[in-house]
Image 1 (tube, rainbow, N blue to C red):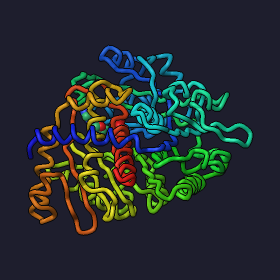
Image 2 (cartoon, protein in one colour):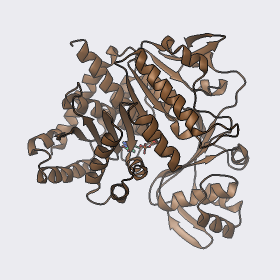
Image 3 (tube, rainbow, N blue to C red):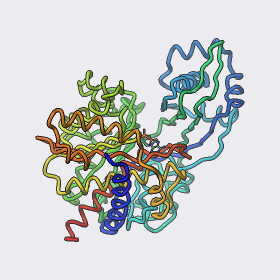
Image 4 (cartoon, rainbow, N blue to C red):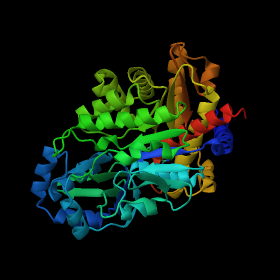
Length: 491
Ligand code: ADP
């Protein structure tokens, strides 16, 4: 495959999608946002942190592999595990104790918008969409300040029985606490010594402590639900944050209540606009019961599109009973891309979806149900557009307008990604899944599904990595909807 060709395709796709974006009337984005407190750990700071504990106790705690942060030692243990593997991790904390401890003992470098829905709302507003309606059930005054202050980003404000759309800064709920997540970033080659064990961090990554206060509920205010029509017109909804759902709550409610309510919201949205498309963005969900419930009860049959990364593909397959496939996705061996493709196809089928978009470092795969109104070229443009967004975000750490998004075009297409696709091509042609010509275009016309595979642009030394996955999924889904609207308008 010719890398130059893929560069040109990226450029053409960017301008194509940019032209289509004004056809969108509005996007709805819910539910999760938080404030991210970011700390980049230097070797000195890491040693200082380790110094707060007895090293033998850290080692003992590492061995218990804590799944939530109950005390500072849990945090220290999970930080070392994450560093040793160079693997991102997100671990919940249910009280604010660790927040207080970290503020006192470490402090942060800076704070910014966090949470998928928060990040996506801001991105879409910056992409100059006519209207983005965000909905965050726990929008505090402080949290509202992290939303873009512009007239195309609105949030429902409940006053008595009326619901109006206002800027988030005028729509917050007074007197509620803010949800603050801590993000500890660390760099490749950082040397770690603890209790006589020495290692070098294999790659840049991060550990997130996500705050899950007891009052947090993934739900919609009754008034907003009853007046959902006040959000219209909207063409699509991007829903995320379902990982916040807990099995049981102290007030006796259970995950079943919140799953049922979420489905009601989805169904009501669809009834208000039968053309509306719903995308769910998945992230890692530790609890298998919740993971399965989200997939089989919220996503399956109710939503159209699912976005996820490779680890989440493996996790999803695992709870859906495809252990072997899940294992081969996670192993990421030479033929990892084949397993990933098969896994994504399986998700499309098991969950009765219209579209599954998997992003990996260097390439994206999008599986499509037959009968989609767009051509594979139009889907490919949507993916390429999102690759440019990802590149812009990695390059500059932010995208605050379309010109900044366009800067992503300067980033080269990943050689490694292209190589992975070459491997896939051989597999495909060998099994007669596609012709050599189709694979040059990145297309696959299957018997019961179609697929688009693109190599993506990858920044060598990214300025930031958090939220890139969200930008990819939201960017591609929004681009796809814009192309659909443009097509419907006969343009
Ligand atoms: P997050 O939730 O932080 O967005 P994900 O794992 O969901 O993390 O998504 C990360 C995605 O971002 C990867 O799949 C990859 O496609 C993209 N990405 C990561 N690093 C870079 C980079 N340096 N340049 C371009 N894209 C990147």
